[in-house]
Image 1 (tube, rainbow, N blue to C red):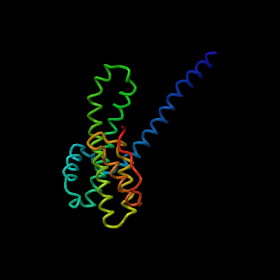
Image 2 (image 1 turned 180 degrees about the vertical axis):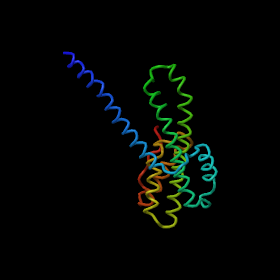
Image 3 (image 1 turned 60 degrees about the horizontal axis):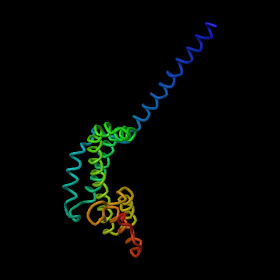
Image 4 (image 1 turned 45 degrees about the vertical axis):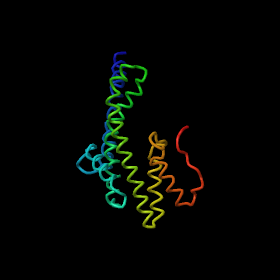
Length: 192
């Protein structure tokens, strides 16, 4: 009977250890994949990236080079992804505890700052894609232009709450329709 108890105890102790080893291997694999995906040795500085993008995108499109637009899109996207690594944890905790006002009040300021900065970077990425599409379409490469417009369209917010509600998504849709000769088909603008 004592031997049976020892064996059961040993099995129960070893199960969590084997699970931990498996989890540790999974973490190592995920970390290795992320390092490979994000490459380099430096992490983007989101505040610097957004300031640079803001200045660059304020120029007339004729003064924006394709190379610089691609760099703005890539850097803005990368910076937004890095912010997302932090923001996702806040968002999960915020969502999991939505019933508790005191948690919401304490978490919201941090959650919201990461969200606003991430959204700004994503908007700059989308504007860069839209501008790339326009410049490439002007050069006559309608297929490549279409897919930049498609990226701006699919990545932008479905509705735009400001102004005439015709933000990046709407503008990208108009450019795609123009390339296909579908201007006569109406587009969604805003929830009314």
